Figure 1 (cartoon, one colour):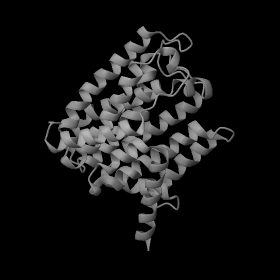
Figure 2 (figure 1 turned 120 degrees about the vertical axis):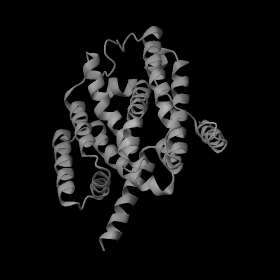
Figure 3 (figure 1 turned 90 degrees about the horizontal axis):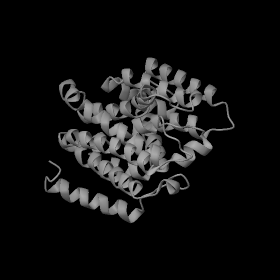
Figure 4 (figure 1 turned 90 degrees about the vertical axis):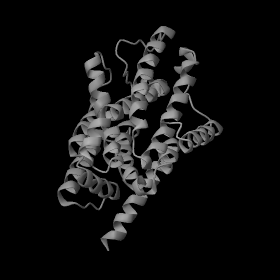
Length: 279
């Protein structure tokens, strides 16, 4: 029965999420069970594409990405795929009308293969829109259950949250991105001589993104609010830790939030949610 294969497809997407991101998998568990599977499907697709361009060195990454994209389009047209990740994702794309968001995402993935440095703010913003903002919008479509009016009301905040998450990841992964992947995302920033002033300018930009994102989080449906708020607080704590770290340390290590702090964030977020303190 196809229903069994569909369930297995979601299970594969869920396993990808758990294996690759403890933080996001915890946040997804804070969502209503009614929407968890759809978010697992989104994350599974996004993570697979990201791994092709980031981790599969030694293989023909361009060919693999092209085949992944081709197979996705086949899955979308046929409404089925023997690739469980694509099978789960195509169903979500159809039900929530996401195709216009998938195109820029895949474009940014191709940029990761061919572009190593972003020299202008326009290039930088184009990449972030495709790699992060649209992922936030995909999730928002699920959260509002396809309600176009509510989606349009919250889309700017969802994009800002996606941007903030991505920029925090850039700061956290400076060493790996620069030394291993040869990428420099922040325009006009010299990573070899990164200064506190440059770091603080980036942090202020991210803080502004978070401020606008919180406006939208407060107005999310109850089924999504706690999980998204938990992810927001986690990334805020990660940014705070980065802000207290000297540039040379950021360039030589990957900044992390320990497991105890993650559990504390979840507990505190839950209390704020229960007492409507997020509102």
